[in-house]
Length: 242
Image 1 (tube, helix red, strand yellow):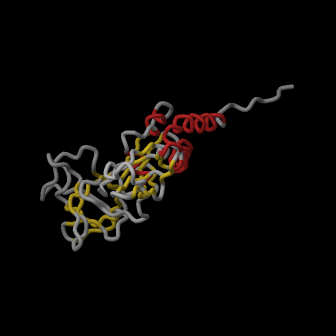
Image 2: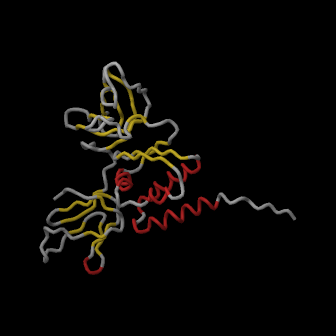
């Protein structure tokens, strides 16, 4: 099947069940064969397999919206009752003013051009722009809507966003042991991050970006090393009083 699971670097990969014992599967991009025919991933991405081949699909540069995706968008304007939102896909997405918790014809959300939104893709089709909503099936926001002012907004490769959102990923949990922060990640490769101090924000953004090719089993050591290096700069300078 070409349905895939998110794979992190260094993860062992089961040979595809559809290949017989005698057919040596072809391995493609992002997979290496170790001794004893064990397969291991070298890239973060999505495992794809057919009867004869397995490979890691590193998401394309451009985001392609899928129904159910949680995304970060930027409001670019308004047409009638619809807001236009840039989510990084080929087309702008649209969002009804009613797609917010508590919104009615008389109680409309106040959105401005440039506002950052956390929303879900609720429909996609070849002929119509993707549609977004800031409420779930029960009409509750559950964290969706306009993001607070003061955070930093940056892009990461699409497979890095998927990795950060994977339950197997340890990076954000480990950072949370040393730093207080709020983070919102969209599957469209955009991240909103709010920290107490600007230098912590710069540190965390760089740490996230540099984690792209770190094998998952090395993430704890990577995070610890980077945090120690960062905190090393905070040591007070000893003045020579002699």
